[in-house]
Length: 331
Image 1 (cartoon, rainbow, N blue to C red):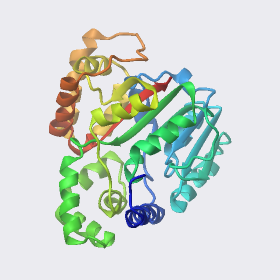
Image 2: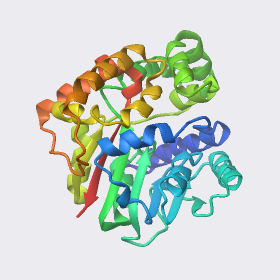
Image 3: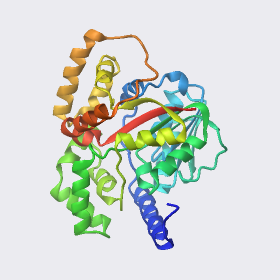
Image 4: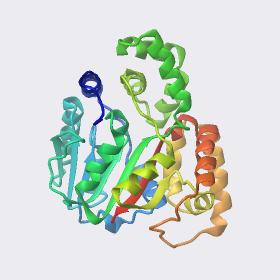
């Protein structure tokens, strides 16, 4: 970003404005059952409830606020704060807060690139599926780390270059056909690539397909990353690796599938029968190695292991694993 010309910087800002406006018109998500995914996800990331219970929690790019509400209620955070720039999404988030009478949740309009909080302010910070729309994903990550206390937990989720590859190809095709018309791209996407939406409709229990289509094809751009790139963010920001979801080491899969929490998460594979069958098989195999141990720091994944696991996300998981999550501890 610092080496951009004035023209390039203006173009980047315009894209960011387009992203914000799109999510304001088409808030996402609106039909997620957050509780079914959090138990297993957090266990596999090495995150213990003590890291957010009774703590000050921040979500960067909260969208419609589903995760903030979860941390405020089920997560028992002392304070759960969500920030976003989309007025439409924040309106949904505040409605959910009022309907649930969630007093310890707060939503604010704020840019993830310029957090209006002091250094070392939050105990636990995270961002799920947002930084790849900023134009400077690592910069957004560093800003989130800045406001996290030393010893605090940092979690980031972005699109994976391997798992996202089939969708990236479709996006490139549609941008050639309608480079400056997001509505046309969405219409063409629904016409020529309807398969993923049928799967996601099952995943989100009857989601309005159009909302997901805008989330996929309406955005003017998105960045994708390998696990090595995101691990580089952690290293440069002084964050020690804790874990990954999905795992980046083969042995960690056996631990993950030995956990009881998988049984609730399993429903999120609805619409992805091959992924669900393979996951069920791993669950059956791993149950014989069931451990009551709560791992809070997994071994650092080597390059060959990272490559193999990401290839597996592409071949087995399809679009279900287009996003991946890495957690760490600020040093």
